[in-house]
Length: 506
Ligand SMILES: Cc1cc2nc3c(=O)[nH]c(=O)nc-3n(C[C@H](O)[C@H](O)[C@H](O)COP(=O)(O)OP(=O)(O)OC[C@H]3O[C@@H](n4cnc5c(N)ncnc54)[C@H](O)[C@@H]3O)c2cc1C
Image (tube, rainbow, N blue to C red; front, side):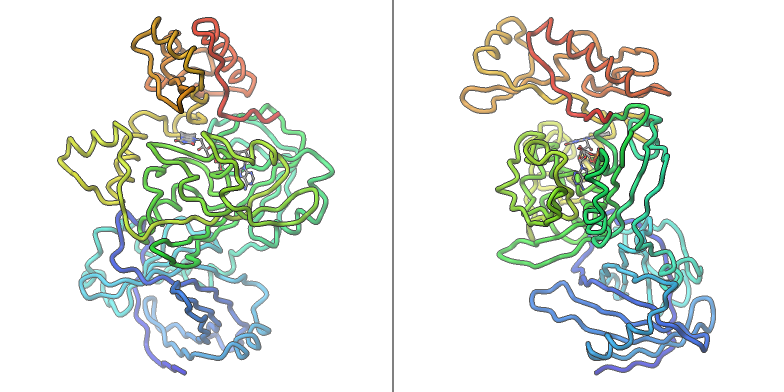
């Protein structure tokens, strides 16, 4: 087994990935810090390469800092039984650090990019070993440097381990304002954050969910709260993305419910796992994506979901549900139907393709590439174009509160569609099947004169009639009143009933 004694010189940067990483080698790392009485930092690490049939390998490391950017390091590969023995010496003040490491070469320099799942770090941490000065490093164009953190104690893994929270935390009288994109200033009686799978089990087994009303809250981008939620808000915040296997040209990737959807999409693109590009920049979490079968620009989550892991609240049992059993439909799934409020999703497995084929069925997307003369865009070009189109027509939730498209596009039978088309020849209509047509809800609302209309604390977004916005200090009741006024008006004009996509939580 390998033993290394060396002076390690490294530079560290916080970065964002803005393109595709060439030939990434990916592994999952769990590292545990051990008690030490001589000032050195001791740790054990389990490392598993994301390759079919790869066995986990175990390492023991002792490090002593010599200067801000260098340390003396002893590292040896150890057996699994030795690893388990050493775990008994784990430092109780530090949690287990879990991260995925992407190793790649650029201009003959080896780069190590860490995506932290526990604790959560806002950006990826890039380590460049052997680089003495910043000048000697050519930074790859697909990385955007946020900060040089070389030598900063807060970014040493041993310090990060102190931030790992493993406890299930229940708080009371919690403001929900930071937890909903509409920016409604509501308050929850109690609020529980789930950091890991053990927390999910603990909550289910505690019986808390059977005693009081509860609501599962991901990123709060599809909800409108009333002033007070008199129950328990359950907030999945578990992190982790793992390549499970590669089979028949597909990568099976598991992502935890608390992962931010938009970050997950970008991460998959960087790793060369394809199929999510058109779903870039949708707010919310991975756990909520199957609930309404998120969709945009010609793709839906159902196209790439392989299976969903969930806990049944009543029985406490858990199950892997295949995509085929999820009843996926337009903005619909079994989790909005038969299983509404009955289960808690903790992870989702996606079936992503190793090769990339752009989906440009959406006209605005195809036009964007035609204008630039690009016939076969790359995965990141598609995601960037989708993001640009979204930015141009949807409000940024951190600036203007909204829940995205507030209403679903209504589906009507062909008889009604044809008689409406006779009256309104420019009406926007998409065929669904032989007997049904989908109408553009935005067109109906716009035609009733609502686009850009202000109604005190709430209004209709001037660039997209489907989006209701918070003009400041909106309450859930204000949003509801506006939504109902629009529904009534559309019905009296067209005889079509709009259905809310956003969920009122009362
Ligand atoms: C600006 C903007 C643009 C948007 N664009 C789109 C778009 O293009 N396409 C689209 O489909 N949607 C869009 N949306 C809506 C929203 O992003 C999606 O519905 C998203 O999936 C909601 O995720 P969330 O984590 O915020 O869920 P939340 O709003 O917190 O919850 C939504 C529902 O999912 C349930 N839920 C959440 N997590 C779990 C879990 N772990 N287990 C069980 N149930 C759970 C909740 O109880 C609730 O019923 C947009 C929203 C905004 C604000």
